[in-house]
Length: 154
Length: 260
Image (cartoon, rainbow over all chains, first blue to last red; front, top):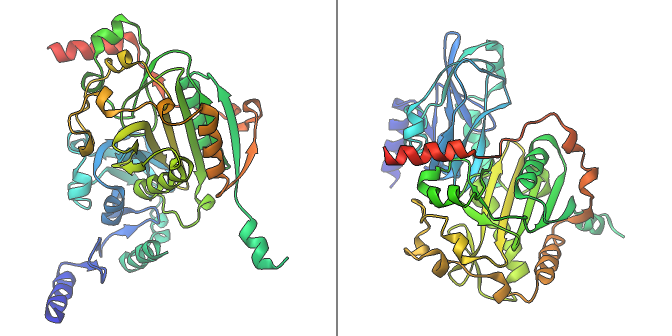
């Protein structure tokens, strides 16, 4: 058992992911995270946004994603869309401000991508950033991991 | 009185709005405003809506959920509401109970669908277990395995709404407007609407008793403050609710798309 845990943590380190001791939600090291459980992947002045593995796990099976319009603007901390799961719509809150340049149309036919691949195929919007300094207010992977643990333990 | 005793008795305030026969679309608009434009906690009680109305969840597709031809022929209104969940047909014998709360109202409650649903399950269990074997079963309120209320939720950054349409009584002919939905709970077991649902009037002595029991259960968690609808500030907030009635043209288009 100890050797399996050791192997798992070495594999996690190689793959640049961190895992909880309870081995539940995945957190990727290169992303930034909001306390509302959205992730951001920055590429120059563009960003890709989705919801985290922790969020999709707690939401349950996603059956519908309400997507915003391309060309509309998002503001950090404001909702821009919603997911439906377990008879509930849950707001998706933008971790950054800017103009939406692309939405993941695949989610209209396959909303379950949010559950199956929250950090890759389940991405939700791409944004041209207004203010890169906003990223400083987001959490890194270690802080977000701790944040999730505290939320689950309270 | 010690500080500890004072702390124990301080419960959050919930503004209680009691209505009779308010049209369900107006109720939904009020609820959406209170969720999005207000910061207080609310309980909305509405006994009946004037005419039979179909209410779908936010992602509902009419072609999958309703028998469109007969709905158009009989001019039954169809509403798409802002919360998730399934399709119901409501009328003057439906009792609506809605809870809208801020995160702080129930501090240890995580704002995700399942915890909120479980919490309301305990609320109604406290209210109704005297009358029968109440369960929250696959997110439905049931006596034994018969559903008597449809519920749905919407969760924002720091607020949530949970609303329920309770079937005090219903006309079984109205259920014919609804198809067997593509996503059904397992415990339904292919049963028809008539076999799957039950009427609360056959289990609970009166509407008043049901309402009083529900309010008593709420009072274990909140201080209920009666509020008149005309005193609600959020009614004047510049906000366009998203719940709306589908037009005849939209329904006809849906019908055509299934025939194509």
